[in-house]
Image 1: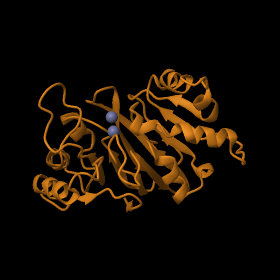
Image 2 (image 1 turned 90 degrees about the horizontal axis):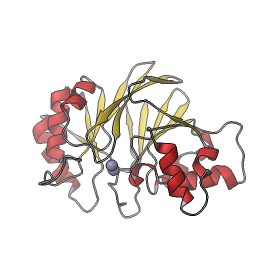
Image 3 (image 1 turned 135 degrees about the vertical axis):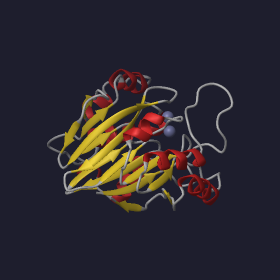
Length: 251
Ligand SMILES: [Zn+2]
Ligand SMILES: [Zn+2]
């Protein structure tokens, strides 16, 4: 399985970057994991958007889905047609949410007409070609799901999505080959609910999960990436990889 980072920014893009978006490729299947601000252009730089078979969205924050809007326009008004629309596995409530987003300018059914949308139940297991996909609800400011991909040929990749501290996520990811966790914060939130973690906490989660490798993401280019890496390495106890836009990671 190959993971390519299209965007790793948090809710505002890096200079010339994109928010959450990752291309997962396995045995001819092309899957887009999240489609945040700026991701559609980055996707186009690495593959034909008509070649994407499946899209999976972790949660309904703009930095994880808003580029479904230009993607839907491309599928609807672009010069080329495809026989079957990309399958879009979306969290519960997506259709209603997206109707409101694009309905703001009167295009209510733009997204649902462009994709074959299916709202998943986080309790179910999906099968998409050579991949088996599982979800785990994680603590965030709205319902969000960690997502696991297991390839039929071997290889397991776990994406934590956006989340506060979660022992359940460590359990869900136990023994995974590649764990990609957010490292959004410089310091834990002092008030209100915990909806994100620090790099140090990402390392703690990965150590607890006994993950083979840790990849940290959802970090602004306004922060010190190398400092985040060493914070995570200190608690993980092993080298940590940084999600870099355009880079690929084999699982
Ligand atoms: Zn986010
Ligand atoms: Zn979020």
